[in-house]
Image (cartoon, rainbow, N blue to C red; front, side, top):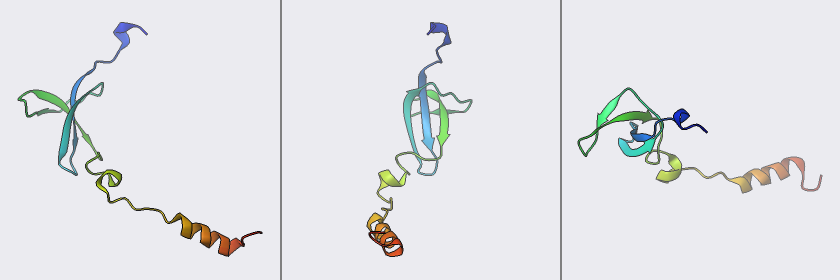
Length: 82
């Protein structure tokens, strides 16, 4: 791949507004909006709807599916050996 075709890779802040959480990382994503980070530098900021701070799997509020109950219901409905 040609070198001049590569997207610019630099520091970006991703912010989860629902959880009040933000983190600084490097990405090819860009934004016109900026934010002043803890180190005093200004970085582009990208708002995301969900992150590890608000996702049910990572926060421990995920529901588990009762697969055994679903199988038993299926067997009652259609018979075990039919």
